[in-house]
Image (cartoon, rainbow, N blue to C red):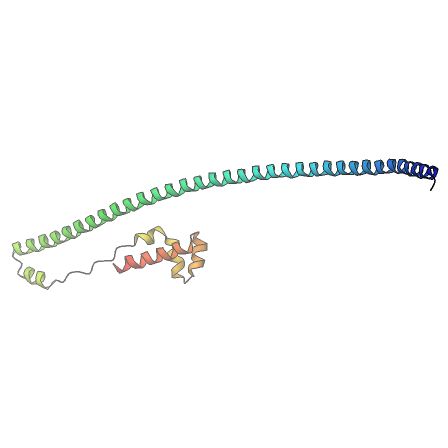
Length: 192
């Protein structure tokens, strides 16, 4: 081939390359613009996620703090209730001791009164006093009036009427277990 053909071919190739070069540049610019827009959208999305994460961390920490505050308050209430229970148990033991001592004193007083009345009768010369003293059997003690029945008259009235424990609890404004306990204590007092 002739050298001028080579020159023409090289010229045509240069022109084609020059024509294609701006199209490639436009594509690159479009790709770069699209890439920048995608990066900006991702940055906004990441910022939103980070903000939401911070809000979640704050919410969790406030819930944790509130839970700890509630826990401390409940522990305080529990310790107060335990202290009150201990005091009530101690006072109950003291009262039981006093009641026992009073019962002993009453029995001793009763025995001394009986002995004193028989001694007076014997001193007067009543011959039947000795016989009476030996023939007298210990009297059956009158059952003391139940102190529980005095405290809860309405409850025992409903019980006598044959009401159920649940019905009594609703009417008296007590818990079912309390009603059962009161009835059991009354039975124990009656059996004593």
